[in-house]
Image (spheres, rainbow, N blue to C red):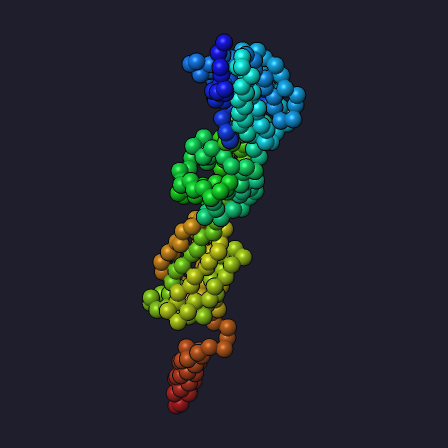
Length: 302
């Protein structure tokens, strides 16, 4: 007869304390043994949460099933031939729901300093997460569940496709993609208005499309916040011929047009100008008439 007062040894190998699983049916594993001089193992029971104990004999594994996501506890009990009992339990978590996320930016007319932000619904395995903005490099940063991707550089009037993929801590996968479009941007035009002698023309209005600017005392003008495209630049100033030229605006650039020269209008005789020439002609005519009359009188004398 063997006297055995020592409980057998039992260790749960899987799941371990705090494990996060992404399935509801799995195989629990454990290791059981009796002491060297013991009476030998007798039986094994297992259960999950408040379910009834399942008798499974000498097995060191058991297919378990849980209901729904959340916290669950596995219990395992063994006894030996002498009736000594050992019991162990581990708490684990089940998450079978794929993560979701709120993303930005979306839409059109976005600024070039836009940053991609992905706020996940739960903690993610950061090493598994990938964010790709087509044609763009950038830097990734994490703060809790929020991923931030800062592009190195974006271009005006460009549509970008963003693709984000990864897994949560339980291994549930997510992938999403969306697009955003940057604004066309604006440019500016600068230049100097001068006359034919190269002297600056102040207080003269320069017009380009719906934009206009007045020159300063140095003849300088600046037209800002203009949409990209081709325009006709005009200057209609009294005393000068109409000035017209085609100019182009490039987003994000300031184009220096240089010196624009206005040509003075030619003077027109409206009858109120200098009459000197007419007076001279009249005087000459009178002298001629007087001369002719004098000749006639001299010929009549005896």
